Image 1: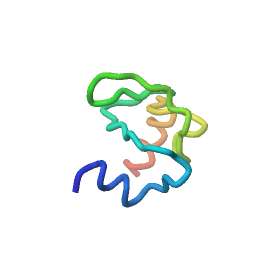
Image 2: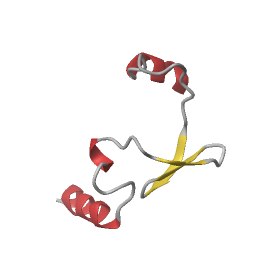
Image 3: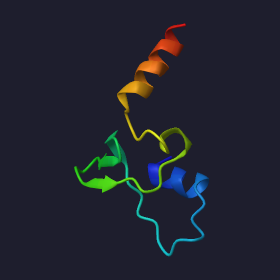
Image 4: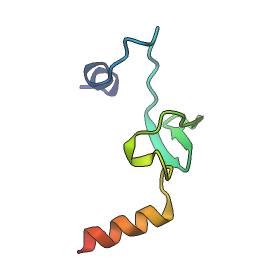
Length: 69
């Protein structure tokens, strides 16, 4: 199953005229970099990134400490 197939299967898109999914290669703070090198501002952050952004060092350290327990 391709990324686009998964997107169409699991993401609600009725409110959009068209979907052009981005395959994320990297993310830091509020910026996302796609597989083709384009950068996007993540204005639709999910629950896990809504307050801290992507890759926040403090959040990553806390997660590592929790995982190591």
